[in-house]
Length: 175
Image (tube, rainbow, N blue to C red; front, side, top):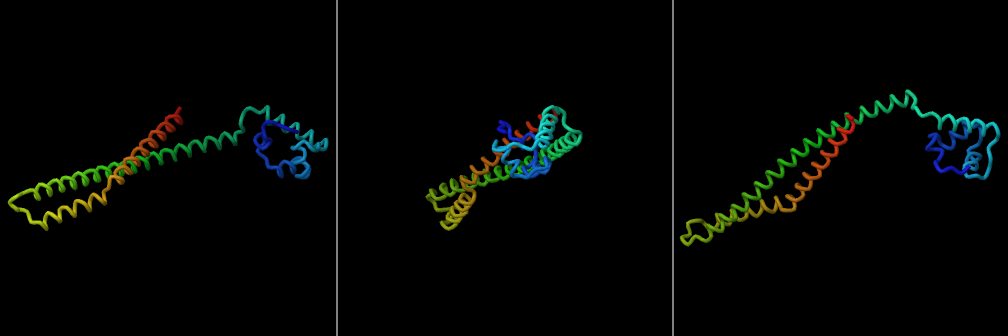
């Protein structure tokens, strides 16, 4: 009994369930499926009727239709919640990215100011004060690194793509 479509895909039954349904041992069913043995006549007649009934039935049962409808509603709700979660996370990442860019710009500005103060001939700025500016700016740049900036930009791009994919799924579901 060689078949291109596995029986499990057609009937949804395990080997044990199929054997019980046909009133045979699981080993008999296994050997029948592999083509090494035939089924008893009663089992074969029932199996033929079962296959005919399943293949000719084009409409899903009411129970299956209700289950599919419930699953679609549940998926729709979950997509909506995921969409909201992604929007919130995207807003957080955008805000974090904006703050990081501001801190980096301020730190570079502080380094430029420090360089200007160091170049002053009159020595109006205290050496220790200039050093504290340098230390603070470098510490901030280390903490708010270019790598962290790029990582946040990637997160933002990923969230934007995910948001678009969810939006597409949501509009597909409405059709």
